[in-house]
Length: 249
Image 1 (cartoon, rainbow, N blue to C red):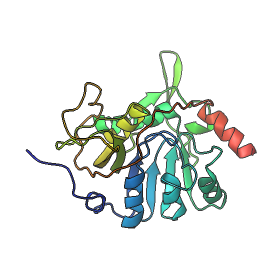
Image 2: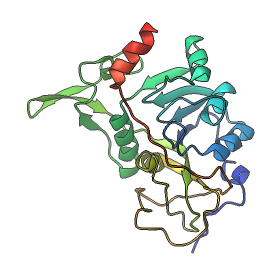
Image 3: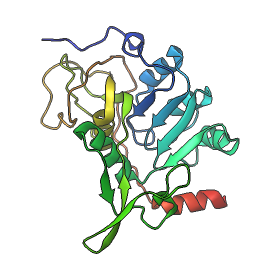
Image 4: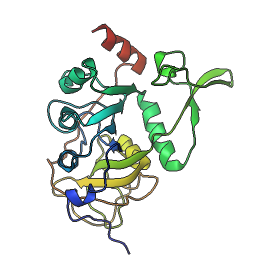
């Protein structure tokens, strides 16, 4: 039986290369693997593409990673909020690229990577600016059962950083309920995984809600973090409306 627990954060993240795509679990400030992000900052990889639901809050966690200037592009569904000043400044200065993806599409593109799906059609985003590729060219569309759809491709990650409740020698996930479904999808898309356990969580068999990934984690790093607290979050605007509102601001 292979024990997949790394001895330290540094060991787990040692193979993250320049230009890697990093999938970071979490929803706003809930479930952010702060210690793993700090470890990535210390590791020094540059020219990263980061995938998360948001684009950082305040000055810690994902925002701290963005502030280093080592993230070339961020793929997310909700980039702008009251405390996203780090991302706002970088984007307006032209120092970071943004790919805005509706939240459901983001989750499904990550899941598709783990499931081996080449591409999929979805009605979400059709007829909006989100039906264009980052270079401005139109995405492929198809009419299915009388409804227009857009072709979307999987998001494959080189590494996935996820907060979880307990360490499992085999790498099985056991996620706190807050934002767990989105974190599970980040785990689906990653080739190498680092799991950060919440303070006080120990080893043992995964609970009935524990197995949410398409596969077990290949590597895991363990460190203490702030005790997990359940939080509520809402996605109040459709992604195209949010983009329009942001451009007018």
